[in-house]
Image (tube, rainbow, N blue to C red):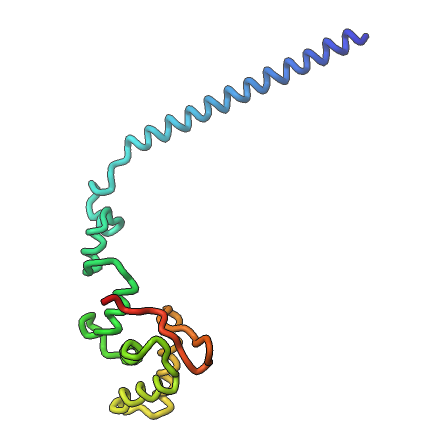
Length: 169
């Protein structure tokens, strides 16, 4: 009886091995079929440069990106500084942010908020705004400059800001 059980167990193991081999062969065949389909699809594709109006979808070189942007270099921080320093060259009006940045740029590394506000108020005096409106715009400008990373809060005193960006000369 034990010989029958052993033979039966051996038979079952052989069947399991054959099934596993079949599954492996089927997987291998399936992979080959998928690879074949992908190769046929790749042969049907053409480079994007040959498609009409491909420039609307994809740019293939850095020079074409520079040409689309109309700038010589792709340095966003330096472009932001230039736009704040000379807004008229970029077709932008002289905004509160550019006024505040120019005051910040002419000051030292650390600037007191009260001094900055008084200089900002003197610059904005001819604009016809009330003192409260000027203060509100100053606060908004400070928060914008902090958000884009140009200033950060003073370490020693709460009423000071530290310049976080310095222009390349």
